[in-house]
Image (cartoon, rainbow, N blue to C red; front, side, top):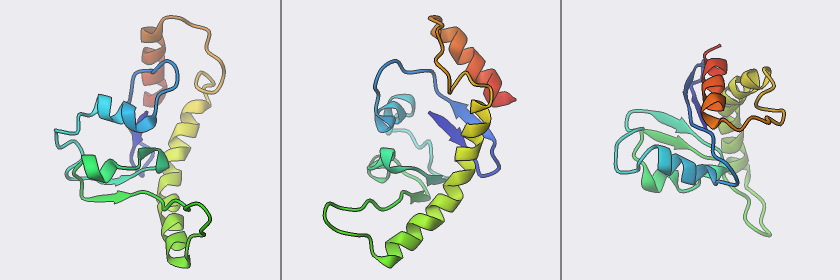
Length: 126
């Protein structure tokens, strides 16, 4: 999990999680909902973090609307999804900048997860 701002500055890189782990479960494990981590911040998330606004207190939450089964999104919801996407794409570019170093995109065959976490921290700093 990576937390970045709109200027592509990476503020947080979580330790690696082995196996299949849901994004929101990782967030709740790393940042306990009882504390006010995001109280004075505007947060943009993807659909993997549905339910964030019920568990965390923050100024504003930007989560795209999900199309329900058998129904289409109306024009207002589509426009809101576009505006959220315009803001979130910058964060995706910062993650893509980390992938340039290929340790995130290629299969890493190292078994020392602490070393892997250290390498990710250095890459985020670069």
